[in-house]
Image 1 (spheres, rainbow, N blue to C red):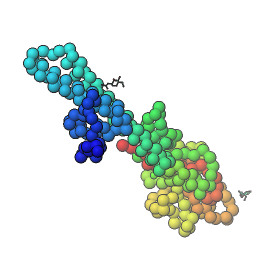
Image 2: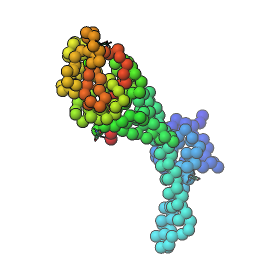
Image 3: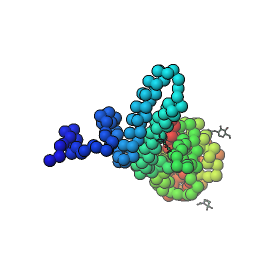
Image 4: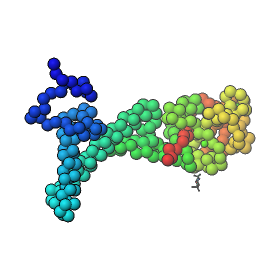
Length: 260
Ligand SMILES: *[C@@H]1O[C@H](CO)[C@@H](O)[C@H](O)[C@H]1NC(C)=O
Ligand SMILES: *[C@@H]1O[C@H](CO)[C@@H](O)[C@H](O)[C@H]1NC(C)=O
Ligand SMILES: *[C@@H]1O[C@H](CO)[C@@H](O)[C@H](O)[C@H]1NC(C)=O
Ligand SMILES: [Ca+2]
Ligand SMILES: [Ca+2]
Ligand SMILES: [Ca+2]
């Protein structure tokens, strides 16, 4: 029967003619726990012999007061080994980061819009490509006519909401970028006539209506047909009008800027 090493439960083989594992080697952390045990063991042995030689080096130096060539080489080797090791952990960390970003990407489909991958690296910008930043928000100005409801869905699909205009400055910014025509904003009174709410269901505080609006009709429509429940911003007037929700206008989406 083979004698058994109590610490590892492994049979103890004859060590004649084989390098023995020194007691220190069992206390040097990860040595031997790698998926490449042979390579790691070699590196371990190499570093151990380096350390042993360095000790000799120091003894030699203190004895003779000089720095030998071999000694300098050993210091260089040790530095290189340390550099190689930190480079490997850097690569591991980078791999983990990429995997984590991949997980985020599945969770947040808009990640690529804010942080596109440029030559293997994610570069994050405050606003997605083709969106415009104003203060801490990003705005998307569509170039395709859609009903108010389709526009609402389009913004949500883009990880945003139809624009909520809360200040004179924001209204002016919107006006500056909607000179080509009517654009839907996130305001409607579909649920209760004349009770205007934003797309996120917050009630309207102060509006920027044209004079005489909202009148529950399309202002160029001289019929008595009333039921205009969705709001547009009127080009060059810096003001809003209520029109029919099924009309097809461009729209403005708004979302948070990614600011660190
Ligand atoms: C460090 O890495 C380089 C290149 O990967 C290799 O040539 C060199 O032998 C390594 N040095 C040590 C001490 O492991
Ligand atoms: C809108 O445009 C005018 C004229 O170009 C400019 O003076 C003003 O600063 C702009 N306002 C905003 C909020 O972008
Ligand atoms: C508006 O009224 C005028 C005359 O009353 C008529 O000629 C025109 O066709 C009407 N327009 C619409 C869009 O109904
Ligand atoms: Ca807003
Ligand atoms: Ca209405
Ligand atoms: Ca109107």
